[in-house]
Length: 482
Image (spheres, one colour):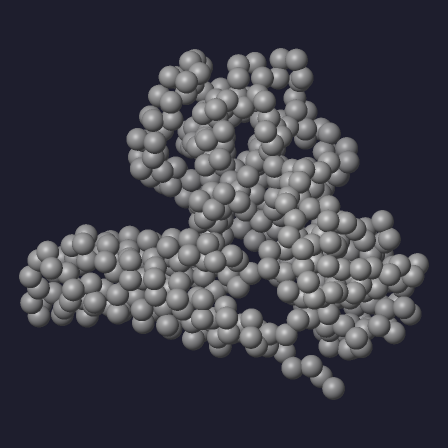
């Protein structure tokens, strides 16, 4: 029997329509309850004339903000996401009011509407998440990989916030063993270490049994992603281009960088001055420091930052990565690094053309040489300019391994667009506010701690490992691991 597939499209459409309705209700209500000025029929008429444009803009904002994919987020994260969406809708409304001269919308109305939107958006999101939790059942998971990958694969899955599915089996790559267990699972996760010939057989088994498969991609598979489908006579082909940006995309990206870096510098100039003053008063000079980094085509440039460490921090150690509670970081520096304020001078690097707003984070030549020896694909990330933020930063963690970070960087290059850049910038802002975009962090639960936390027992039968869940869960404090 074919399993019925649901992708939640109708629920997302319904949720979107509710948000658009709430946007219009919020502005209408703000006009009605605002007591700082008197309004007549012309004010409401002007709003009615602009409502369609505001509604369309709200849909665009909600999509770019990732508003419909937050079921696995915490309640705090959802409120912040809703607040950012409401703030962006308010900014667009002010722009509409500016260009539509007849629509004079006071700031008090926008503020009242913003408050209404944050509250009502959050309430709708709470209802949607509650509905999803009630209607979606737990899924049983089968993991396939080499035995030495078991702990890492399971730890990564169990570390997912609000993880609700059940890990049932771990099996070494063997199609006979897998086929006998497929009828008892709902999802299959496959490591990238599985050989291609065996992977094909496993995929055929899963597809024939209508079971969704999750695969860690190899580099060439990332290159195929979003490739052009072509036909030679009656044979389909994927056209796989070089992992680089086209000349046209680079021009558009450069114009985007110039405009938004100038805009950011103008808006953030008071903060930049306050940061410079705080460093000078607390730690003296120098206020900034520069360091050689590598960008597109292996070109070396000097990257600028606000100084967050003591002077000559690497005099005795040489080039080393920062760690949590690093003694070299100053008191002011900890605050700067928490909110990524030490990175603000890189906006000048963007204006100079050394960097882009979005791209792979620039590394030092020493680390590039080391990573390239271990990961041959590392060189591909130098096909674009280094970025102030990047896809690997918003999707990964500080502890994410270099070989997985390079996959995020390659995915970014393959899927580059101005819209994608804008979404990454928005995600960066959200993570900075939430404090989840951390550096120098090496805090994760160990494999054994995660089994205790989720109250899981494992039974190792050689090629097959079975997992059993108890009802009670244990709370653990995070601890540093190597």
